[in-house]
Image (cartoon, rainbow over the protein chains, first blue to last red):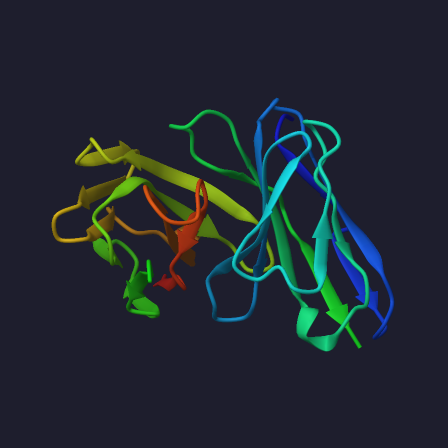
Amino acid sequence: NAGVTQTPKFRILKIGQSMTLQCTQDMNHNYMYWYRQDPGMGLKLIYYSVGAGITDKGEVPNGYNVSRSTTEDFPLRLELAAPSQTSVYFCASRGTEGDGYTFGSGTRLTVV
Amino acid sequence: KQEVTQIPAALSVPEGENLVLNCSFTDSAIYNLQWFRQDPGKGLTSLLLIQSSQREQTSGRLNASLDKSSGRSTLYIAASQPGDSATYLCAVRYSSGSARQLTFGSGTQLTVLP
């Protein structure tokens, strides 16, 4: 099925470890986003991209990095995991200006 | 600051009841507004997308309205069912500020009792 695919679905990291959350979409969307969702809170934007090679910071970018080498892929990198990064991470994409957003199923990350 | 607020945070209704979920936003200059459903431990499923030029959108038992001048949107669910139990999120794309991003409310957790 076409859509946004995120891997892994679950991950436990130790403090100071690094990991990459993968996100890929097969809808040829230019716009891609990373959000985090904390319990009882709305989603907060981490980073976004308006096309291959172009990325920009969102509301809560500290502790994260992204790259966008292809239209399909938008990985999110955590370099030195901290307990404050325990959250559920969602990747989303959008096509043209009038389109709605399509979300992936999320990655549940716990940092211990 | 451009914000989105959803009240109440939680709602419990008996099966069969019609209900309204509320969403308010602080700036009337919006591009569009999207309602999502989120089941526990799952991702977001898009329910309805309303463009700034539209007043409402309908899908089955769901109807979403948009009033930009008052900064409000409502999601109306007719003849509620236990399967409608989920968290409903409202998200706004503002026309200005941080480009091309959605601003989310904190959601309304709906429980429909059999």
